[in-house]
Image 1 (cartoon, rainbow, N blue to C red):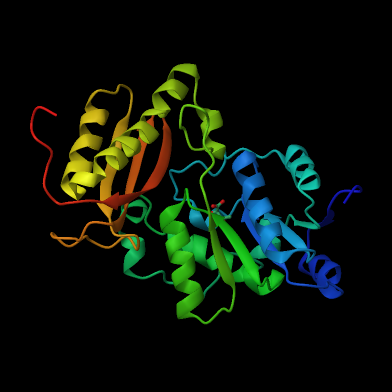
Image 2: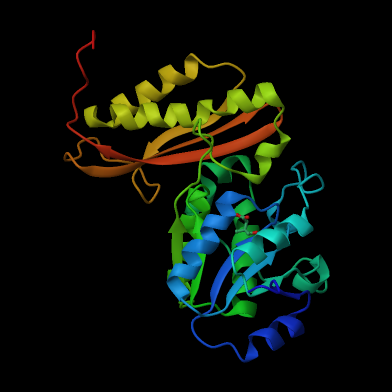
Length: 294
Ligand code: PAF
């Protein structure tokens, strides 16, 4: 669209813009500060919906931030975001205020994300996924998309949204789009802009650690984890929160798995005061370790 996307800041404006929509509605929920990773989500959404309306929401959701987290300093870059949306052929950008999403303050009824929200990110960020699922459920109710696209970079978030959609019969196709990376492997993230040049260089450790796990995965999950830990020990400036190898649904892997079993390596760490997360798929091979001198 040459004229750029239509802007809606209220539920009524959004409903009016979507009233005459033809074709499947595609939806990419964001917190703004858009970058090439988001642009790739928009392209994936467009592939799924063809000529249907593509809707982006930009909303920094207070409900998913803990009291000591970066809600106030979270980057807000609306003009640049709208340029990316225009470039990618977005039809509607929904930019609601906090009052518009949560009239009357914090909602009394929220989504309880269940046990999967208590591990990994959930350990460090209690309440985070309750906030994410609640706002996504609300946004799904307003946008009523056929297809919604989320990045695999937030792998646990993606898993929980898939689970919510199935468990609550929401009838939305959830698509997980591949992580976009810088040349040195750093996963694109709105939070990367907090990193100074030294920290930016150190941040590439996360993807190196995950690649080490991928390379050693042919020797089994334990070897993948050991190789990842060795890469981490060689790095500086990275304060590890967790490094795990799980099954693709974030459950524990059984001790003995057949060659070809899919798994996931996930990492979270602080570089300076910025918390970064990343993950990569693994394909596990035979379960014996390589010879010591290899
Ligand atoms: O991944 C994000 O940007 C946010 O968690 C989301 C999914 C837009 C919900 O606020």
